[in-house]
Image (tube, rainbow, N blue to C red):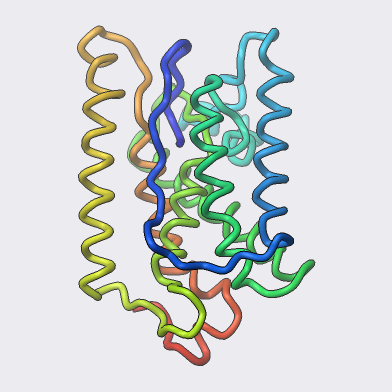
Length: 231
């Protein structure tokens, strides 16, 4: 879950797919597990050095030449609960996607490309809405929501690519909007009332999700050629 960083603030729960019915082979679980491991190692390495706020991305950071944060923020987290929630969601969503992206190493590269580009889409949305913002945004949730958006379009093997305008897709999007509204009320409004910075980076969720929903199927072999391209 991406967050605009505030020390000592617990994070929120990631959405999970329901009833996906996926048959996920063991090798397809490895890329997600490796990403979670990298994030965990990075977080542990910063426990005694003041945290990972320096990896956070913001409009001010980019304007100041800290371009490394464009990618580093995806692997940075603000606390144990933050990384636990993101790690669980990332691992749960990655296996079904990797299983549809082909055999390694090419399938793993497609998955990594979708993860990174979804994260960049989430970061772009966050910075576009806060072009002069100084609050750093941490977390992989822009990328995670991109994986979720792609997975919504890709039911189990043998079914047609899910159109964006389908009733199922609309219902899922409405549920996600409701859950993010609740998370915003729980994690963003209290800091604002107390005159503090930080909270829920819903902008990253939105940007990553829209990228995965509209572009994600193009990363999966056969979907655009045999099942129709994204609406």
